Length: 295
Image 1: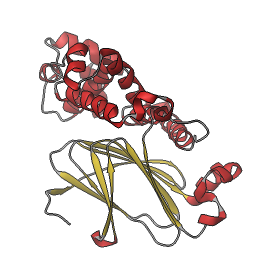
Image 2 (image 1 turned 45 degrees about the horizontal axis):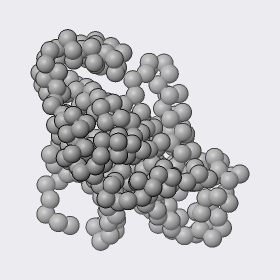
Image 3 (image 1 turned 60 degrees about the horizontal axis):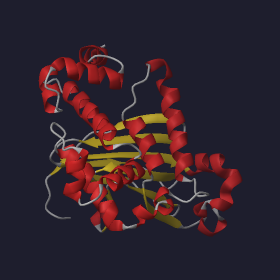
Image 4 (image 1 turned 120 degrees about the vertical axis):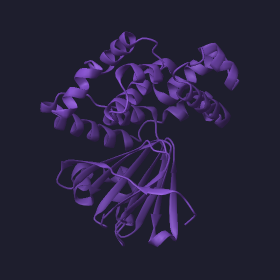
């Protein structure tokens, strides 16, 4: 293993039902965080890296799989246990599903012929696959990371979104958005759109205009708008707004900044404008949100 600055972090575990668990990783530090968890061979693992980068290490570091931003990894091996040993890099969000094979079979018993590793051929074998996260899946992942629902329906909401995520993942009957859109088949175009996303997030307090952004990445304004919508499922500024509100929420929860400081950090010149924006996103004011977290 390379010489790295590795810190041990914490993760949020969400119990969905027997044989079905969700793990949420959010490393907002400047260090690589290492997460370990026992997972035996009777479970499937789905890992979705929404932003940043993660690495899964096996066999005491002799083998590793990288999962870059906006990619997913499915792990399945009936021969050996695959304990979770993940290195989650700085500024990385990742969501993982751990589901028993028995539970999975109960969901897809009627569709086994459409899912390779449910066939007899893979019954006693390993199956790994890595894919791009499609825009519909990215939307559900974002909802699972940022939900703001009443506690009385929280379990139902999360369970519904998890099942929606699984359904979208195995929705192979339709071609993906990348295959449908000729613009996105060009890898250079995709790189430019991702650069646009990085630029607006890096300068979220004073983002460039769409025209300035299009010029900086070398695309027409029309292609920027259409490409961003195709890849991220939202307009540039709507995507940025959601990111800013999530960033602000985490700053508030740290209890290291007051409302005015948080507002300035994410680009609001007055606290009243920030409070209005926060309420639009989360349905409550920053102060009331913090009070609800301490109850």
